[in-house]
Image (cartoon, rainbow, N blue to C red):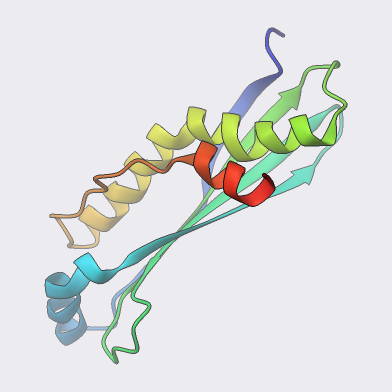
Length: 140
């Protein structure tokens, strides 16, 4: 194993797209630019220096509109750590930054495909998620 870790696999653990009806769909289609993306990253230690990392994307309307859709994806990545990784700070950085940057293209593509397949064809994320910045804000 070279580097600090190796990705053993990645997959969509859970996928949810909810639009209750036609009126909601038409309303959301016209207002989806107001939707915001939330990201939550959790990890579960496994055997043999393996870790399951779950990156959850939620795309939702934060305003109190009665008509809204809800989109969520939980993307799971399994990594195996190199023997040398002992430091908690380094481990946090691997989970929250390094792995995220590596899997983000697949994660974003899967999430956008779900939105397109849900009838919202004009969605794209202009800004890539800056995991480095998010990590630095949280820990520095």
